[in-house]
Image (cartoon, rainbow, N blue to C red):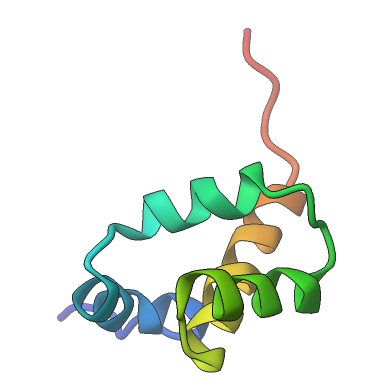
Amino acid sequence: MSETVKGPASYFPSIEKKYGRPVAEWKSLIRSSPLTRHMELVSWLKSEHGIGHGHANALVAHTLAEDSTPRPAAG
């Protein structure tokens, strides 16, 4: 039995379908932006890329959460 995806990632299939770009590409755009604050990034995705508020919020929330999670050191 597969687990149901919850939280921001639950939006990813509809984001990819609606906007025609993979989520990894959106995350890369978010990370390359000079903006760093959540709502600044959401507003930027909405105004510059035409993404709806809920989808923009999900992308930003998931990306910022990933970036704030400590990763194990290589070695």
